[in-house]
Amino acid sequence: DVKGRIAWRAECDEWGNMLREDNPDNLQQLIRLPGQQYDEESGLHYNRHRYYDPGQGRYITQDPTGLAGGLNPYVYALNPVSWTDPLGLEQFLFSNADEAGLFAIKMCNADSIENNLEYGGLICKKDENYFYTGPLKGNLAGVNPYKAACPDDSKRVGVYHTHGYFSDTEGNKVLKGNDAYDSLHFSPQDKSSADFFAKGEKEYSSYLGTPESTYFKYNPKTQKVSEMK
Image (cartoon, rainbow, N blue to C red; front, top):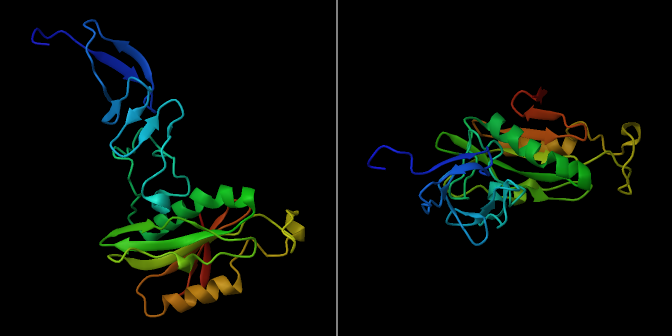
């Protein structure tokens, strides 16, 4: 205040939960981290487009951008200490296609394994930033990530997909040795489609997530596969 006294002070954890509050003058201070507004009736945090629950560390309202922000429409920033999403509309941007591709397959690979379905989407570039389209859900035998579309003001520079879990031809989960789909490797169709769309392009890569949570990149120009970490 004007006398230099602390009129309000609070300590929050990384997800925005109030750990301690000092409010000797009973001030109405509704601003919460990161710039969200506290709703006294519900106990939730409002950030213009949707409501955030610090107790769960997630939004309780779906992402209005749909799957553009990721497979989980309720997720908050994965690292709340260094990342923020003050409007609830943030789309992750990356400095290169490999970062975007690896993030995309890591994001949906666990669901792919659990549901034994393939997921896939595109890697896009706008100006010097790279991002991924929200994952499309396929079936046991495959997914067509090319049904996704990069925004009109961006360019397609890659594709990503996952391979579900080890399965027999009936869709039953099996041990790795009985897998009918060679799920740890790019299929010939995976490579041929990447080769086709890479023609005439300056940069283009294909990214794969596997049942063992290993991740790979296929470079159509060199015809080589490399593991990603």
